[in-house]
Image 1 (cartoon, one colour):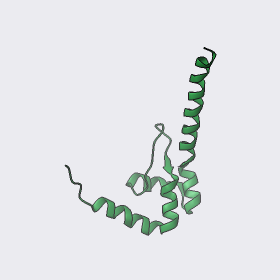
Image 2 (spheres, one colour):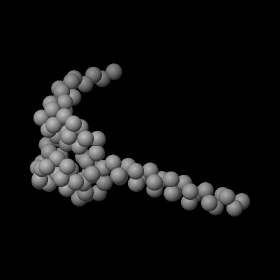
Image 3 (cartoon, helix red, strand yellow):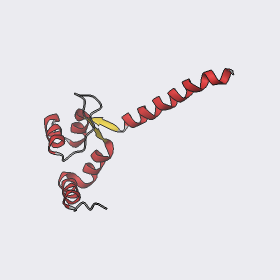
Image 4 (cartoon, rainbow, N blue to C red):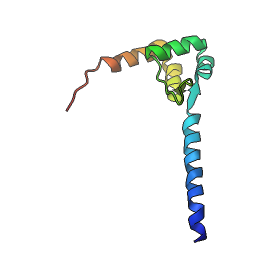
Length: 95
């Protein structure tokens, strides 16, 4: 019986850890700008144009996945933009 009371708190802690890990992979616009050597307004414009994927956890906050920033660093901005354009040009087939 004593263990039943502890189980919900343990699951809550696990969920909190998962959320923290997920949030650790998301970067703020300021952090992205620092890593890429751009201004924050340029990063926000890239998000608005769809050149950079973003997640909005709240109305005002904008977070960018760290994988996208790593890809930009690896490929350069032009190379990353070219891969995004190629993905958009592929026709979508509905089954």
